[in-house]
Image 1 (cartoon, rainbow, N blue to C red):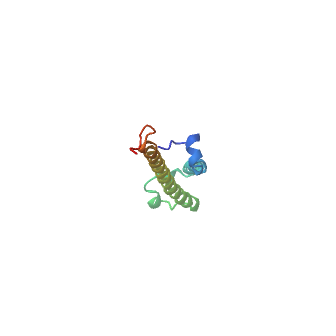
Image 2: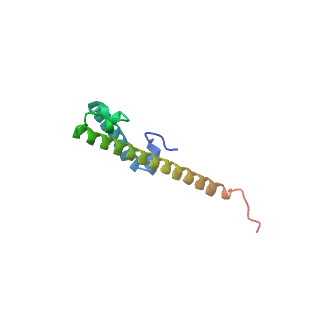
Image 3: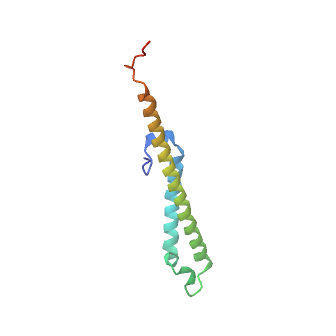
Length: 107
């Protein structure tokens, strides 16, 4: 399983996780800053709210939606990496245990 943030031994095998972790953190900070400046964006009724939202708020809404989508994709990547890591571990265990050194060939 890949921890969040990734540990050094995980970064040895999947170094890209370091950059993805930084990206995820930056996205969270950017989203929070936009919501602080434009709190109406967090409302479910934002697009129907009167008065008509200002252009900056509309763009903030678009950015926050894209941030959420990208963070979902980052989580999917982490999950696939975790699955790949577990598969590699299972394959290594199989290789190491396939033939024990004490097994003698019958000839």
